[in-house]
Length: 206
Image (cartoon, helix red, strand yellow):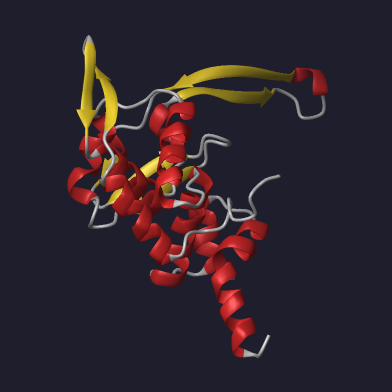
């Protein structure tokens, strides 16, 4: 059974705990003909996920399913191809903004870059990184074992939405458009977080 916490956004305390634990992890990355230890990779990965909302497949690159229908009235005219999309690199940074495309539908996302990650984000994008989404999931599972709660990519993505809405005070429509969230996702994980609902219930004597 899926952990009900697995899709919830992090509380700020949980988020800081993941950052602290990630900063203490060293990841082996392939370089040239061998391997190197990178003590900064996990700390930068978690902050990138939390502050950009990017999918891990944007970092890893990979084949994307593309569907094209020549005539909307003729079902047989629909065709599907798989095209390789390279991992994101520093060219996606333009001034103070990060531009990337959602893997599912190719919709563009343009998000202001948080000052904390701006000095190293381009370097992180250009460095050698894992080329499979499964490897990123494994690294986050290792982090999960350290902190004791789910740390999957979706939680970081939902948390980015929470930060935009509750901390930066963007309106719900803007956050939904930026992140590509459905109305249900906005309501369930961003606008009314689990912690807010609990606090309101407790304040009313629940």
